[in-house]
Length: 423
Ligand SMILES: Nc1ncnc2c1ncn2[C@@H]1O[C@H](COP(=O)(O)OP(=O)(O)OP(=O)(O)O)[C@@H](O)[C@H]1O
Image (cartoon, rainbow, N blue to C red; front, side):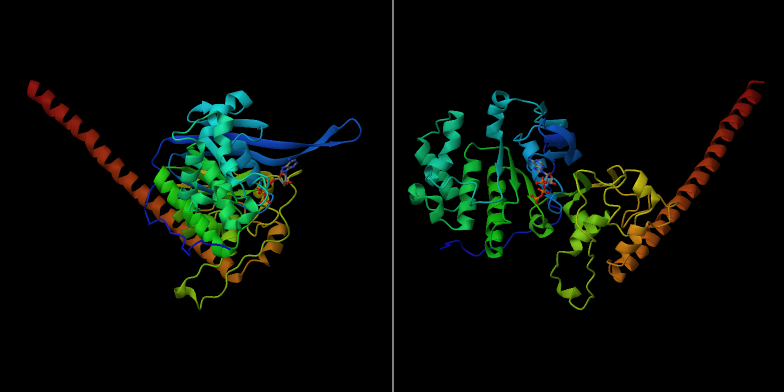
């Protein structure tokens, strides 16, 4: 029933920069803890730390991809930044305005600017309403009368998302999955938003249709100057459309980097593991051995997340410091922030801490030998690079000191000659 044409996902050209715009959304220390209540009195006995201190910015015109395993807090983050959920802590600023605790009335004008596209195109559309009513609803809710009337505008939106404007009076069940997601996109675009948060927009669709919807989102961004936060559990979806990618693990961002940097040299072991799960078709590597990393067990419970680095219970590099001290998300390379004591493809941040935890020894059994070897090799290479840079810096410093010594002598000599002249 799909009348959609086969298209390929366009990869953004190397070096194309959409990140130069002003900061549209700024999130600082964002938290959402869902209380766990028990008993007749509904006393709080704990909390699910779904989102536990996020810091990031989204610039106008860019696409931020957010990835991570199921349950790591991606959807909660999406609902917090669109203010469908009230944060427990932290701050959300939109165009410089603090919207963290705005009420329904305060949020109303903002609802035009920030829209969400949901994962499931089947349950997010009311089956009893025609698509004309569904796409036209935002105008009624906001009391907006588009030029030419709602019907005309809805039909325009239908053609913008590649649907037949004549189907205005049809019901959601008359459309395929991909077409329903297009209806969801048309509804999100109705009020001409600035920021669109898409929560797993294609994961409920057939693989053959996924590319078409991603392609549509990409085209719309270009045409309408939209800014996206695209949530996915799979790196292959965000790879082609994101300018930057945030990798989440148990309510935290463990790596936030420019797309190309992240794919070329991931720094967090978790990112590396996620990436090894996505087969990348590359004819040059067709004979290369598989370098898959299998992570042991499930993501630990967000009710009592592990101490220190939350990934330490599944990481093959974890040492004592990972268990005791939480690594901060810091920019180790321009455009690449990482929260790890023993990053990949970079100098070790805690080289003195060398004794592996038992969990790490077990995890290493699940990591391909090639990965471990490569990891050791890059660490050694980076260490040598750092050492060489330090030596070079020392030489430059010594040379500068000699120059300075000469420099301080010279004025003295001049002074002496001057004094002699005066005599
Ligand atoms: N309303 C809620 N009440 C209690 N716990 C919740 C609620 N919503 C989410 N959680 C919990 O918060 C954690 C994060 O959930 P969230 O849906 O944000 O993760 P996710 O990364 O989007 O996962 P998925 O890809 O499966 O949707 C999970 O452990 C989930 O069970």
